[in-house]
Each structure stands twice: as structure tokens, then as C-alpha cells.
Length: 221
Image (cartoon, rainbow, N blue to C red; front, side, top):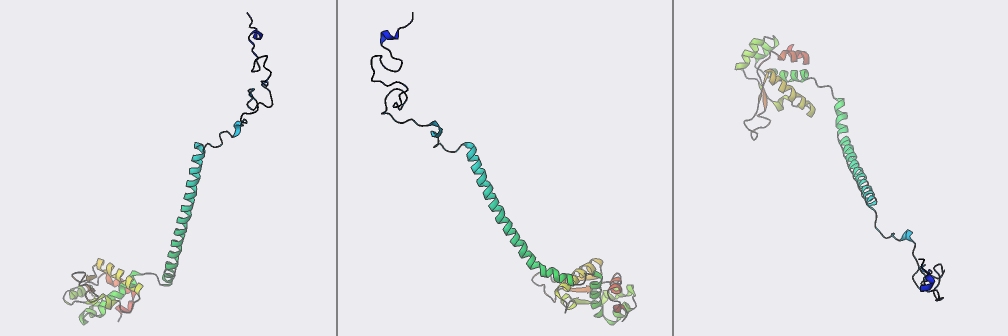
């Protein structure tokens, strides 16, 4: 049952057994390696056959991540530079102010409260001043009901530096809260001015502590 290839003229090298014009499969002149002769295109290596294909998904992700990190670093550097500039400007502006503040004496509300009470009591009628000197508290408060003692705030703080004016205003608020003073002001913001804002003396009861702690001469004259 074996097939005799010689009977059908089959040549396993690609041609008829009696046709010697066809080169063998291993012919060095056969460009395709198929026995077709040396006239075909040269074969290409598969190593570089896919070189023209774009970057992979992993490479794209890496590129986007690197671009994002680069932009983030640039933004952070710009923001940090702007913040540093603002901090430096703030230090340059407030540094001298803080240095000047350190040279000033500490804020003592008793001292400034005593100055306010002393200024007001010096403008009181003679009867009131006499009671102040003798520290007759009830008599003073009774006299203050019928003898108004008022001074404009600008008059009380005349000749004072700006920071001292602020301190005296704070002390006047505390005295008003204690009931020693009444803050007098204009009926509206339009009518408010230096002449309408002032202090009215109402009581000396709690104020004697301020007088004694702040300036003893106020009660000894």
C-alpha cells in the first residue's frame, strides 16, 4: 500500500524529479527560503517589526504621572515662594512696631484708671473736691447727682501718645462697667465728634482703689 512518489513525478524539494531548473529549499540564492529563486524581497527580522507601535498603557500612565508630579512641584515652589515673600513683608512691617512696644511700660489698668478719675475730680465743684479729699464716699456720690462732673475724652487724653490714648479708653470702659463713669456720646454717628464724646463721673466708691494704686497724690492734695 506504499505510495511510490516516483510514479507520479513528485519531488519533495519543490519540483518535478526531472526538472533540474528549480533550486533546492536550502539554496542560498533563495530569498524567501521557498525555492523561488533570488528575485524576491529580502526577509525582515521580527525583532524590529513592531517598532512603530505607540507607547503601552503602562508607559502612558507613567508619562502622565511624571507630568503631574512635575507640575505639582512647580506649583508648590511658586506657592512657597509667595508665602515666604508675604511672611517677610509682614515681619518687615510689624517688626519695628513690636520692637517699639517692648520699650513701653506694661499696661496697668489701675494707673490709667486713676489718671482718668483724677482728671475728672479736678474739674469737680469745690464741695465735691472737699469730699474727695476726705474720702467721704456717700457724700461724694450724693453730690455727684446734683453736681455734674463731665469732661470730653479728648480733653482727658490731651497730650497723650496714641498708645496711651488706647489704654485710657480701655480703662474708661472698665470704669463705666464698674459704675464709676458714664460714657456720653452723640445721638448718632453723624453727630459724634470730640466734643460730644466724653466721660461723666458718677461714683467714687470703687474708684479709690484706682486712685491709691495709681497716684496717691490725687487723694493727698
